[in-house]
Amino acid sequence: MAATGAPLLVVVPLAWFWYASLVPSTYSVMDMGYADYGGGPGSSGSSHAGHDMSGVSVAELTGPQDGTPAMTATLTTRQGTVKLAGGERVDGYTLNGSSPGPRLVATEGDLVEITLVNANVQGGVTLHWHGIDVPNAEDGVAGVTQDAVPAGGQHVYRFVLPHAGTYWYHSHQVSHEQVRHGLFGTFVVEPHDSIGRPAPATDVVAAVHTYDGIRTVNGRAGLSRVEAEPGSTARVRVVNTDNGTAPIWVSGAAYRVAAVDGYDVNGPSLVRGRKLMLAAGGRADLELVVPGGGARVDVGGAAMVLGPPGARVRAAPEPSKELDLLTYGQAGHLPFDPDQAVRRFDYDIGRRPGFLDGRPGFWWTINGHMFPDIPMYVVDEGDIVRMTIKNSSGDLHPMHLHGHHAVVLSRNGAQATGSPWWIDSLLVEDGETYEIAFVADNPGIWMDHCHNLPHAAEGLLAHLAYNGVSEPFQVGRAVGEAHNHPE
Amino acid sequence: MRGAYRVIAYLIALGVLSQAAAVAGGWFGTINEIDDGTVITEDYEGNLGHAMHWIVGMNIMPLLGLILFIIAFFVKLPGAVKWAGFTFLAIIVQIALAFISFGVPAIGALHGINAFVVLGLALYTARSVASGVAPEPVHGTGTPAAV
Image (cartoon, rainbow over all chains, first blue to last red; front, top):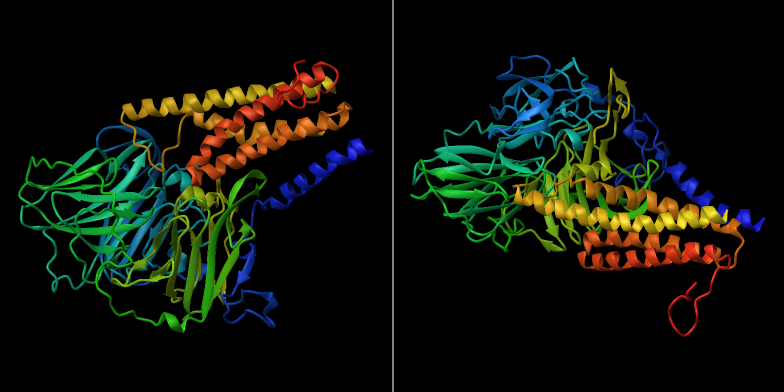
């Protein structure tokens, strides 16, 4: 008996942990984990029912259904071979035949209508407007805000552009696979009052992406060249579409960081000899005056040269010093008072051994819990919310909150003293603690996850849910051959 | 049962060799890819060597260790459970060291050294049943008794 009993002491608990970790093939994100009210209404007392699911459905939280759009676009996704700008061919996904997909340009306040057509992507696709705080039903997250669009299907997104800036779009269906292999593009929203502010003579996007080990800017490996008049001002909108942090530095000129994650920096000073570490999913608009010999923007493994035709700019080595956005620029006014916060959430990122949906490994934890037993951050519309993101997981995480921009209050206890630092994608390194604040002004159910997308697929993914919003969609549900898998 | 015990223990030893080969081949492959222009970032997915090291290390090795440990209870030789237990433990430690090393790369040196511990324990465990008696280490010399 002892011989059979002892191994059971090992096998039975292991089998139990394995079994308990299994995630149903189809589930609503509202059934995952536990509600976290952040000390606000609903924390205690009668609300054992938890989040109030009565009321408006996510599917009803659309943009305007009437009105003539100022910009329309049709984006057709295909799976197959991607031909990069330099002629290299890789397996992946295209939008209208190319990767990156078409650059969308519109003006702040515009109503836009974008039709997603899925030509042949068997796993299904969606489009998420990264950094654009669209109404919830337009957010493009499979299984949370819509069903994945199966091959042969289409979906129309309609929304008003709330804020000028540099953004991007990408699939949020099997995103760790589809984005890596090219299903993305950039989206520039111009200010409607640009008459008052002189637009830079040169205004370009530099989308950083790595295809099968080929580091590119706008799909071009190595050096990209942009003709720019010496003495004129150039704006380079760097978009990090990769899963890793991109070091950005400039050779031949000093630069200013004019905007971060689509929001202008207040009083940006000139930067020399420092690099900006750009979070995965994040954007930074650099401004510089083009020198006679040109300037070079390096993104780590690829670069863009701006200047007169044939300009050759010697690349400076990657600076060891980093530009710290916590103290960069001039302090400014916040449109809300973070001290009036009614909810204070913790988002503690750790790591521990265990089973994730039956797979053994060392998996990410949120507040000590492993997916799917993770917090659902519950808010009411109008709440001022503070969130403390603490990373003790041994790895760095670019944290992306959908549907909202948050302002950074402090890092490791040091208060932010520079320009209001608005983010939608915040790099939180191992051992760091950031405190951020935002206004819950966009009802819905929103993902709040790591934008190192394989990490999200490994369970580093939570949601922010508004009271009174119900979830009609389900993760895992099939539409044709496409099963909703947002990660 | 002793035959199975011995075979599994040898498979674990073989696994260590295959892991060393896979990771060395993987990184030499990477160096070669860099020469061909590949840029290594967080988005680098590695090559066959890295994939093998991951799959064997995260799945096959702990599974073999667990099976060895379970079988040990039925071998009915003194020391069988103990040495199988040590082998299983060394495999778990090896995986833990790997994950700690992603955050603290210096610990990676211990991951390399502990591979020899797993190898030594697996061979010792296998040979202990080959002799029909699980040998106890000879006290005072610090080395296992020759069999």
